[in-house]
Image 1 (cartoon, rainbow, N blue to C red):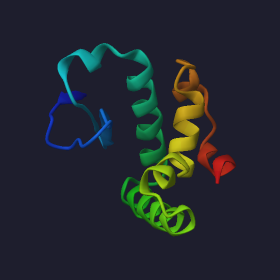
Image 2: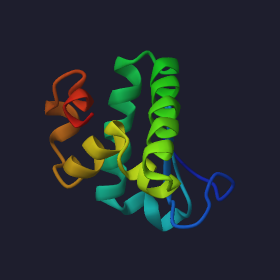
Image 3: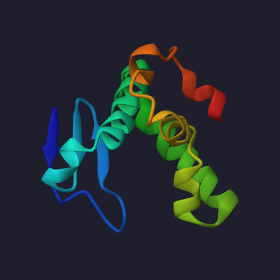
Length: 107
């Protein structure tokens, strides 16, 4: 289910996945197939980590990478979940074809 809301977004961020929803910044983004595919990859990641563990690991990895990079945006771009999603967002078959726990390859 895709929802539209500006409440969750700052700066250049335009999409967010909070299982079971994909939330986009504006209505036109609902038709952005690459963005929606990126967010579908996150849905798969969240399901395989029983949702709550996804958020725990995501925040923990982001915090560690913030310390390493001293830059929150660079930390975000290097989170394993994001690296997997960005690397495969243009492959529209990826969410269905990916192996479980594929984000581990991006640690």
